[in-house]
Amino acid sequence: AFRMVFCFGMGVNEALHITQANISRQALHRRVKRARDKAREKEDAKQAATSATVPYVAVRKKGGTDAPLWIDFNETILQPLYPRMAKTVKRCPITQKMLEGPLVTKTDSGPGRLAKSLASLQFRERAYQRGQLIFLGLPNGSSATQEMDQGFSQYQEECKKSTLRVGGMKIRNRVQARKNAQGRKAGVPSAEDLGEFIDGEEGSPDDVNEEVASQVQYKQSVCNVSFAPHDLPRIVNGYPGDPIHLRPFDKTFTKETIQSWWRKVGFLPMNRNSLNDPKVRWQKGEGGAPKEAEVRIDCLQSAYQKHAQALSAIGMNGDVLDLEIPEVEKPEIPEDEEAKAEELVKNGVVYKAGGLVRLGVVIANGRVMQKAERMLIEKQKEEAAAKEKKKRDEAETREEKSFLAYDHWIRGQKKDGTDARAHDKDGNPKLPKQDAIAIVRVLLPRFAPKEKMSDYGGMSKCVKWLGSLAGRGTTWEEEITAVRREYSAACVARSKPLF
Image: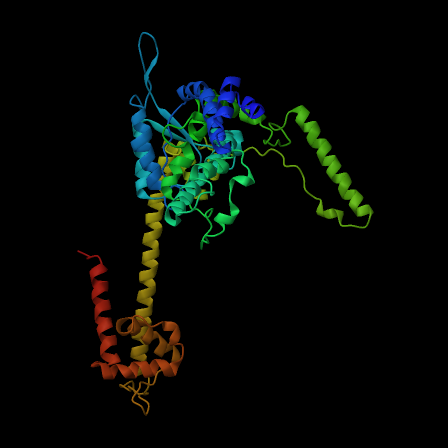
């Protein structure tokens, strides 16, 4: 007992008191834990004072974000925090200190940032007019260009520990509920004792009376727990009153830690430290790798080629090792904003972060993006109108073909040009295959809209269907005549008057 208590920093007098009290092993663990927590209070209070912000947790049912959530976060949470946000910079005439100015929001290019919806477009325009500039980070740039990725590894580990802690509490509650429901006998450990074992405290197999515990059988394991949406805040930042080491968000996102991420990425202050990240790969050529790195690249290329030759020498296919280190390609970036917007629309990359970066566009709601989006909307309207016109022309062509087929059936059977109206023995019209299909294609949607035209690919089935209309109180001749009248009226309505 003396050695164990001393390891946890307790005094000798307190250890003697514990020994004389002859308390249980589990109670001793609890006493040691309380003493250890007290030793952390000063450090916890100090770190809590340096916490940079408080977490804002909001997700959709699928666990991610979308355009409405992204808009809501900016307009209800972020923008109200900066009342001096403005589109243009205004300084004090005496001290030259900035009184108001733009707010630069650096984010990744995840869901909702470049949504195509009208609400998202209107939000980006409102944010620009208010003075918020949404700066998109380099897509797939890893932690080299993303400040949040710098702290992800640390924050992820803390959240894993917090998840285990929340899961342990759920197990403890389930154990307590089963104990209360089943009324177990003495000898089974209490919920608090099991909670300590789950949280990683020392224990002994002798603390559990397996003989008594095995008398009750359950359909589901006590360790089979699930997490609900209300558990997310507890996992992200612990419970109210928890010390700092149990609050992942407050422990990770401190002012000093965030500033260190800024220095590593080099966006603020603008020192371009991201280029010094080990993950960044150099390219050969002018404006690419420095001399030291270019020498290393040449050695790498030479070794690669030697290995290919060695494979060929032993009878293997060394030609598969034919890769070459890429060389710098100077991108052609238009200088004019109008030209940039036209290039975005032309290449179809208005809502693709990678395409925006290649053209030097990093502000998701800047002037270039707004011009490009307006151009794209106009282009989409023109394409929709052209598509509708094509659809209408195709419909008119179908109707005209059916009219020609009907006229051919009336006049084309007799040499003298009189009405023929030939029918077969069943009373169905005698029509060539193409004429029968053309007439059915127009009349089928009027009488059987749920049927498919693909089911009427033969002449006999088409003429039988046309003949069956006589049993519905009408005939196919009356219907095709009615379609012709409607078509003629529609053509007259669309025609522009000459005078």
